[in-house]
Length: 506
Image (cartoon, rainbow, N blue to C red; front, top):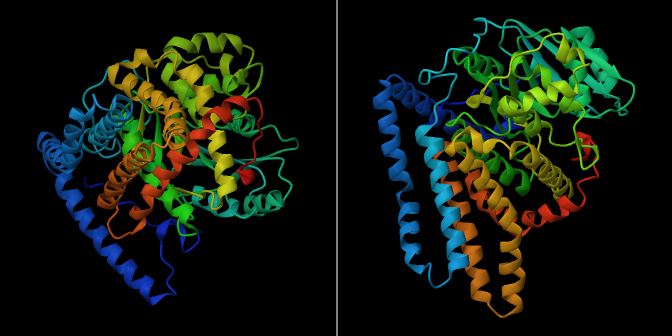
């Protein structure tokens, strides 16, 4: 389960960012030296594995992963005979455990970072990018006075030779515009000032209209990028012409603030390192996430009008920004022509009509970005409701064609949909119905199953992030997800027509 060591340089970022210890505390300095020692060992081991022939490297990795997953496999085998006695509880637990094992196997054993390793031969009907394509890196911002300077400086500080940085201010009112004017006088950036707040998707589309890059990259206004993150993503697109888009690897920038941020940091790592890696093995990552989303221009340009003007249930839908844009890359063979006809009067469509292709969508594990996560419960819940609404909206689009992208991609996508849909029902049964009928043991077994899954993800985090103690917070996220967040799906469905965009309110 060895991973490529992340870059640890953050330009103009807080000393505590991304787990980087403050130099003022001697105890933390000692911990920092220990982490650097562990990281150096990981780099040496990773380089040794990377130097092996492909068939040896892959074989060794699969043997190690199967050995690490053996306790979960044995637990699965032990539970199978119990299925007739409690088909609902045991059956649900078996499905969840089997899905966890499968995703971990795919994410650790089959996934290879496309910026590091070449994959098997692909069809040759995909146009190659230039060796060093021009990249447009864009960010939309509204009322982010505290974090936008660090974000812009890390964008400009990206270790990439042919880069244009475009910042779109979506009618900020808190002094963000003054910061941007100061930065524009100092740095080589283009700033667009919208007088009226139109939403993130319209703001980014405004930026795309003036962009010139062969590659369009996006980040969020509360993020900071590792200097090599963008270059790694571009390298993956250049090396694999059938990749239409890739996602970077996000962690929490403010991980040390509260218990909630520590839990989210461990959760983010697993959602990218394992879940996105598993999807990437089938070339079908369903959400190229906002902290670092990198697209080929020819894979996505024609669909920005549809994205910016997306409607759902009869009104503008301001969420689903990341998932929906990814969906246009994944499903353009089946839906692209219809979308382009609908917005045929847009210059982004008629000035250059790119052919629909069956692009793959990937994930670059070594492209690191850090994002500010909610430190308090109320903003966290608001964020989760927004994500649930995005999930519902995107299901009604991406769900119509994912079955066509192959059995592996379809199984991961629809399996996740089933799990999300069933989770509220299981919570009601085991946390409400069972205690009301005196079946406290059933509730206890359900919670034990939730914690078992959480500990499995915690062990995975520990093995891939030596030198940190945040693994112990991962079960907290599993418990929170089952006991609290599962209830948000029906609420989000009932309130899906209500929505605004402002990152500061999340």
